[in-house]
Each structure stands twice: as C-alpha cells, then as structure tokens.
Amino acid sequence: MLQTHTESPRNDALAADARKRSLSVVIPILNETRGLPALEQRLRGVLDSLGRTWEVVFVDDGSTDGTLEALRQLYARDTRYRAVSLSRNFGKEIAVAAGMRFATGDGVIVMDGDLQHPPELISGFVEKWDQGYKIVYAQRRSRDTDAALHRWSARVFYRIFRLATGTELPDGAGDFRLLDRKAVDVFNRMGERARFNKGLYAWMGFHSIGIPYEVEARSDGQSRWRPRQLLRFALDGLASFTTLPLRIWSYIGLLVGASAFVYTAIFLTKTLVYGVDVPGFPTLVISVMFLAGVQLISLGVIGEYLGRVYEEVKGRPLFIVSETIGAGPSDPQKTARAPERGARSA
Ligand code: UDP
Ligand code: MG
Image (tube, rainbow, N blue to C red; front, top):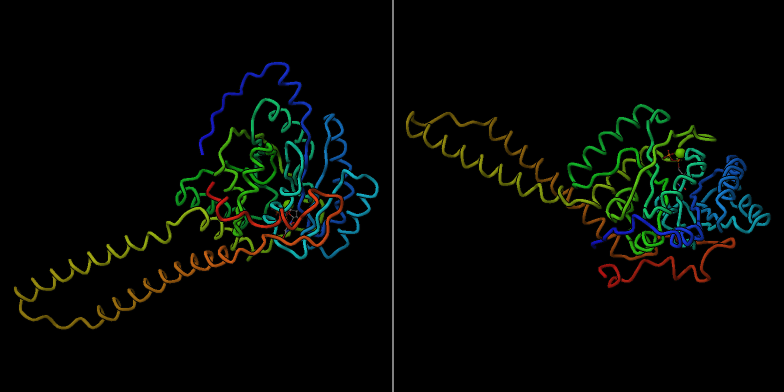
C-alpha cells in the first residue's frame, strides 16, 4: 500500500475547500457521568470556534452508571451530540472502532472522555490537517499522571514492541488524534478482533505529524483499565503485529540440537581417550527437564496464536449496538459487521 505525498503547498482555493470540511469527534466512555458536563462544555467551546460543521459521537461502552441517560439528555439539547450504545463492555479499542464506523465527518478526532485529553488541542490538529497531513496525533510529554508500575511496564512494552515488530510507535502517542477520511476508511476496513489501535495507526502509514501536549489528571475516579486487561492488551498488541514468538522456536531448536551434537562429540572422545566414564545421572535429569520445559513453552506460544486465529475465524461481529442516539448510517448491523474476507486483502 504505497502512498505518495505531494500535497504540501496548497493553493488558496484548495485551502478554502479544506476549511469547509466537517469534523467528527469520537469519544469512548465507560461510566463517566460525572465528567460529562465539563467535557461537553470545553468541547463545545473549541468546536464552535473552528467554524465548521461538527458532530460528537459518544460510544457508551456498556456503562452502568446512567451515562446513557446523560447522553440522551445531551442529544435532546443539541442533536450534534450523538451516541452509540454498545450492548455490553467491549473494551476501549473496540469502542473506538465502533465510533469510527458511525462517524460521518471528513476528519475524525478520537479522544478519551475523562478530560485527560485537553479538547483545546483540537484546533492545532485541524490546522495541521488543513496543511495536508492525513493523521495528526497528540504526543504526551510525560507520563507523570500514571502510576510508577504502569509507567515502567509501558516502557518495557514499547521497547519489546519495537524490537519484535520493527514498527516504531511514536513516543507518547496514543489514541488522541485526528484522522482524515482516507485513514478512517482504511481503519474501518480492519476487522480484526484483537485490536491494538496505536499499532494500526502506525501500520497504516500516511503523512503524519505529532503535536506535543501535557496529559491532564483524570476528571473523575481512576483509570478504567484493570491490570489484567492491560497485560492482555499488551500481549494482543504484540501477537497481532509479529509472529516472532512462533518463529523463534526453530532457532532455539537448532541451538539445542547443535549443542547435543557437540556434547555427543565431547562424550565420545572422552570415552575413547580416557575409558568409560561414570554415567552422568544429574546431567540426564537436568537436560530432560530443560527440554520438557522448552517444548511446553513453545506449545504454549503456538496455543496463543492458534487461539487468536480461532477468535478471528469465528467472524463474529466486532461489537453489538444496543441503541443509537441520532448517530450515523441507518443500518448499524451492516456497518458493525467485519468486512468480507475478500475485502480485507483488497
Ligand atoms: N473506556 C471505555 N471502555 C473501557 C475502558 C475505558 O470506553 O473498557 C474509556 C474511558 O471511559 C475513557 C477512555 O476510554 O473515556 C480512556 O480510559 P481510561 O482513562 O480509563 O484509560 P487511561 O487514561 O488510563 O489509558
Ligand atoms: Mg484516562
């Protein structure tokens, strides 16, 4: 998928056209009733100042705290605040995917609903977008608002990810970004269940640029991610971008085979030169246990991948919409379905 980027110097007519393009803001939310009014207020200020048509698509990811009711009231007051309610909690990555399918704008902004992503940055996004960038992402300067363990594990993960996949994830870039319609359409064609959005954005390519920002403290409560979910997410991210864990076992097998060969040679010479040696019982036990361990680990890795293949092959819908509030195309079932197999490679 090669893209050429020739659109740097735009003429005035094109620039005027660019300013007419509409915007959608996709916001996944899980139990954020309390933060919602402040979010709405700041968003409105920024979006109105841009002088374009806009809509906000909230994705209620199975909230249990009256978020849905609050979204209904919001829509009743201003029909540009639309919402999609998922039938249960599908996780943030899938919630974002759902929002993207319902967003109708020429440019789509994705942001968190906890005000950690300052809406004021959107005007900067739009400016870069008008200059011709297809993806504009916010790049956090520090991770000070995260817990120490979270910070450390994130660092380890990014290092492993870079080494294993060869895909460089821009430092501190997250979901907070603007995608041009072109990128949104590509994103919508990716029907995989194990979603790692950051990786998908990087994989897509396109002319991209980062804007640095300072993450704000959460408007309410704590991170909605549980540690177990984060670990699962990290594994999904790796597994969906590299098959290195599968391939590595051939090399390990080769190494073990070669050392067995060397050991045989040493053992033979020893026996021939010095006579019969005392049988090495501990060596035997240790090597049997070591090999059994290696084999079980490799089986486990194959199982991890096989499980993922199974999940994908079932081809269930990525998400289930229980209710739409003024949002998107009229046939949500159609949009919610994963793309046809043939379409994926097209
Ligand atoms: N979120 C969601 N579904 C989930 C978890 C989180 O829609 O299963 C939303 C959440 O309401 C928030 C955004 O995703 O708007 C980011 O979540 P959070 O702040 O908990 O994550 P963090 O900032 O720690 O990455
Ligand atoms: Mg947050």
